[in-house]
Length: 112
Length: 115
Image (cartoon, rainbow over all chains, first blue to last red; front, side, top):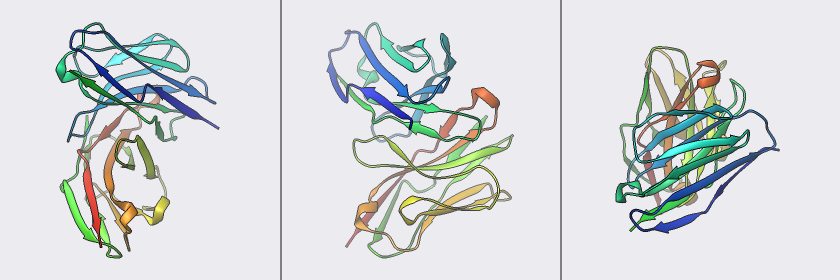
């Protein structure tokens, strides 16, 4: 069966520090991968998505970047965190055209 | 482009009462529709999805939703709620654009079930 792993679960980082959040998927190949952010009291905003290795599409200009070094690995990064980067970050994957989207358990990031 | 509107940010309801969470969408192309539930500090769990076929979709935990193309709606219903249904509910839409499909969410509805 397919599973999605996301870590860490919680993270407290000072302003200006770097960030690396990792997401991996097991039990499938060539999935579409997504990073979403949920700010406090708000809905989910799509940040990046990837349809294959090295292929990244950005939805919102921001202080973050994403990379897909392997088929089932999706990384969200920042060189210097801002207070506004705080939020709940969710990774998701999608298989074929008629399949649903499966989400990881999320990372709660607090920038202080 | 597509968008989702969840008109109710909060819905209070008594246990064992029925509930309807409203969702309307806008899209220039055919779409798939989803409802997700989020419990505090957790990820999203799929409740149900509409891809094609019958417009009445049954999901987990006794929830169901009806796709109404003419009204561009996909309202979520449950005939009798339980305390454990207290959570945030998100309606979402995905276009059918082949490999580059994306999921667009509404702003969520907080369902608060009380005794």
